Structures are given as C-alpha cells and as structure tokens.
Image (cartoon, rainbow, N blue to C red; front, side):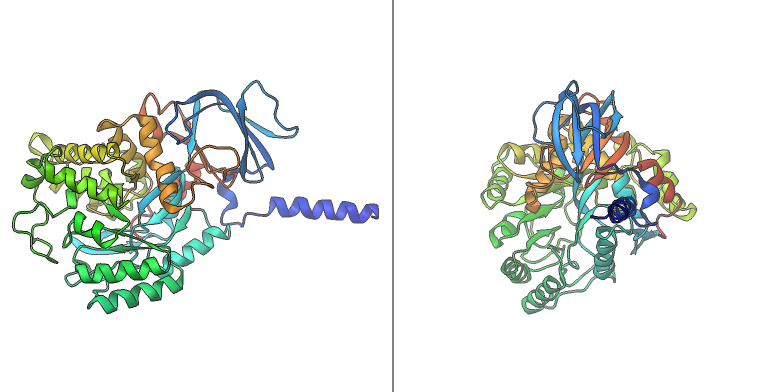
Length: 472
C-alpha cells in the first residue's frame, strides 16, 4: 500500500473516532479514549456480592475488558484515571421513568420534558430507563432515536406505549378504552410501532386487561400496571408481568371493593396503617405474585414527597426548576401533610415491610423514580433517593443497588449486556465519590457516568438544564 494512502487512512480513522459524537453530545463527553483504565476503585458489582476493594476496570471498545487488582498492568496507551476514594456501580436501570412532569398547579396536565429529563437521568447515573407509561409516545420514540444516534445525551430508552386506561381517566391526555376489542387493537397498533412494553392504568376492567395482556404476549411484550379497579391477585391470575408502586395502591383489601371499580377514595391511609403484612390475606397475595412471576417496581420517592417535611429539599432540585416551577412545587409541598402528624412515614414503612416480605418470598423487586405526584420526585434524583429509602427500610446498600441495577436488567431480558459490573458487558458504569456501601447517601455524589464506554460529566449535564423544568 502506498505510504501516502496509508497515512490518509490512518488520519481518516482517527478523525472518525474523534467525531463519533455530534455537536449535541460532544460537550458532555469527557472520557472517550479507545482504552480507559479506572484505577484504585471500589466495585459494588450489582450482583449482591460484597464490595471489591482497590480494583482496576479496563474499558475497551465500549465494554468491560477486564477487572483486576490495581497492581496489575493495563494495556499500553490506556487513559488512566486515578479514582482513589471512589466507588463504581453498574449504571442504574430505572424501571418506572417518565419523560413528563406535572406542569400545572393543581391541574392534571403534564408537559413533556424532552430536553431536560434525558439529561437528568444520565447525570444521576441512570443509563437504562423504561418509561412507565407514555403521554406522547411519538415524542418518546424520536428521543430514543436521537439518543441512540448520539445526537443528544440520555439513557438507553425502553418505550412503553400509551396508558391502557378505562373510563374515568384523570387527565385529558389519556385515551379511554371502550372495551376488550379496543384494548387489543391499541396493543396491536403500538406493538407494530415499536413499543417494548405496555402499562395498564387505574380504571381498566378485567376484560380489557385480559385482552391487552393476551395481545401483548402474542407480540412477546410484557405488561405492567398501576391498578386500582383490579386487585393484585386478580391481575396476577390474568397474567400481568409487573405491578407498580406496591401495596400502597392495591385495593383488594378495601372493604366493599366492587369488581372492575376503583374505589372513589382509593386505598385509604387508615386501611394501610392497620394492614398486617404477616396476615394470611397479604401473605396469600405475595405468594400469588411470586407464583405467577409478577415483578414489583418500588417507587418510594414519589410517595415520600407527599409528606411536606420530606424529602430533604436540595439546592440541585431547585436549580433545575424554572421560577414558576419552583413556586408551584414549593406551594404543593407546603400544602402537604408534614410533621409529627403526617401519615406518610408510617405508610412508607408499611410499603417497605411489604417489599421486604416480597423479596424474602422470592419475588423480583425493581426500582424507579416516577417523577409525577406533586413534583417532588425529580427524574434521576428520585432514582437515587429510592435507594436511600430502601436502605432506610432495612435493605442493605448492596441489596438496594442490586434492586436498582441487576434486577431491572433481568426483567428486561438484558442481563447478559447490562446490570452488573462484569467482564464482557457494556461499560455502563457510575463513578461515585465515597462509599455507598457504608453511607448510601454517597449515591448522590456522581462524578462520572459511562455509557457504552464513553464518560459523561454529570456537572455539565446538570448545568445545561438549569431552570428548564417543567417547560423544556
């Protein structure tokens, strides 16, 4: 080969490597060497195993090439990062995420956060996210395409179709099903469009849910649900694959519950407060869920926000809100019941007892943010907060991290690619200053996020969305 041609080809390959990120993404990528060595890190690998101390992770071609003691040699020419005092965990797999946020004070209308939320998720360490119901599915699809083509930052998105809701939707942005035929037709249409899951909602009937589940399963697609008209055991017997939120939304223990009817007041606080997790009815529900392989998604942060004194109000939270958004949220927070008389700490404790009993019985527990409610559960930030609340409720930090990483990957059928820090898997990693195994609050101290081997600067991502929510 002529020397000049060889030089030209080498320059072309080098230029291609340098330009694989578009201008919309390049400002946020701070580590993009062909081979990278993360030196002197603590590893919490997501499997539930104890942390590994003083290790070096070598990343090459977007994957984890090796994990070895920090005294071992690394490939020549590697970019080496001394991360003494830092911990590496798998990228979070958020299983109840949204790309919308409440935009009106007391009005059930939600604005699509197409610009800000993908950045917030990624900055917080969420490298894979399943939307937990969509209000603008075509927007969600197009965001996924932009992210996958490296034209904008964000996590790997799994798009859930429009809500499968029955008559009585609380927001005008939802389609109301007219019967089982409509449910099956809706599933068939959106499956053909490319959604990878569906979510049943509060007023769906048993016949509509059965038709939707059967149609979804024909397409090889799973169905989750935030239910009210249907109890958990009924849904499990119908064949649902996943249930959101846990016991706090299960109406099957509501006195006088009528079939296909969502009680006007939902599940009351008094009902939950007096429900015994060890009782035969609750244990029968847990056994049914486990028997039918129904996963549960923990969304503690969205419930905590209804206590006016919780969660701790962080400056970073206020920084991403617009002045109007901050005013609206602070007003909602002040109206919430807080202090010594708040029922929510007890309700959270009850939910955590349920989640613990579910896991001990062999159930698959996952985690997600659900940035809805009164606005207190922010995309990404609430994913981190959910880990803190799981630990507050009795899970170990290592167990909480497994719930938020490997368990979600397993449900998505992607455990061979993501979910744990393992050789051969995609280099989707979160670098944290500190030791969340000893102090789970360190989970907020994200200093670098790797997705497919490229390292993103969370501070730059957060700065780019300052004042953006809920209008962008």
